[in-house]
Length: 267
Image 1 (cartoon, rainbow, N blue to C red):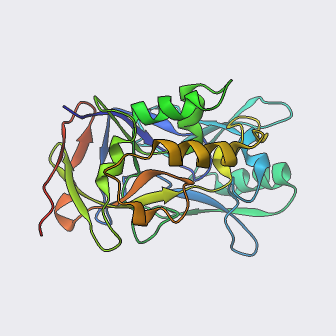
Image 2: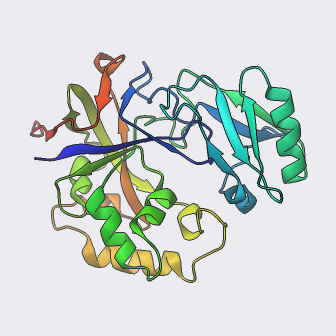
């Protein structure tokens, strides 16, 4: 039986995640505290790992480790790498000044507690991947561990007890949503997630892996399950599934160990 094996939240967009035992669904379908904060430049653009590889050098942790943050973040910032602790609500200016010095340009911190700052604002639900998929992808790249691939892909919920690419069952053709549940939380699978430059880079150092995207695309195409809605793959640089959650899921809790069930599609 497929089951929920991991829940990962990323309280600050593009910074390190935290593994939690449970997570609450917001009214928007996003998970509470996921990408709740983000860093912006003076032009209002995200300061993220897509635009700035240097951000990979920052190490972030959340002292209470629950993901239900009291707003405290601990940062290790090069070159000293000494820990600096900030309260995101009460010490925002100090944090902005510290990060501005690190990046070499002025940055600001913003909060969105209703939806966070997802890449796909049309499908802001948790991204889904399987443990077996991460292991399979790691096998394509000598020297990369499953944990490193997990950090590069940055999915929210991880399903175990299934074969590689099982999550490709969670989307259909262009206009079809696939209904499934995790525990008592209902989901709609929308589409495979289009990947960006981030997975090509070392999650700690920001250094690129030679021909990562080329290798990935070749292997993804070769291992694409027969049941997959191939119309969703104009290219094969896609992994994990973007989701939406109905209003009825708001306030419900995802819990490690929850069983996962796909509902038959209605014709």
